[in-house]
Length: 161
Image (tube, rainbow, N blue to C red; front, side, top):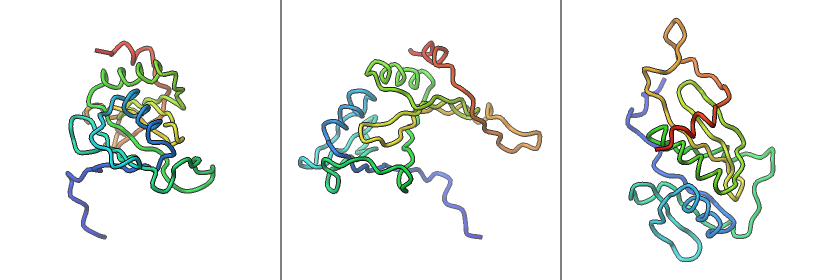
């Protein structure tokens, strides 16, 4: 067995191939609220939350005008965006609903609450917040016992700051 990876390793950023930079910026910046940090010509843009150099890269280098991958192919299932507080997730739901973007699902997983939707290129997007680890469901033996139950969206919206 190999040595485990360092506990503080994090996923730094993701980079998505998109069909249209402006359309993707409309979703990620105008709807979700990410900030445009830099454009790289007309073929790429880098966006972030909180001034980081970039959490998401968007490019059309191999995909300008392209279509989403066909069902049944490999690739990205979804990207997950972690919000620091439940109220922040509630605000994200308000933004998504205000833009008329349909949800694919909304789940309470015990450890987190999550919203599932698609970006303009049909990439799966999960918006979620984590409960405190002391609230996570556990088996009598102490193992994690995540589940999937419907998320009460009205209750979540009541948490908007």
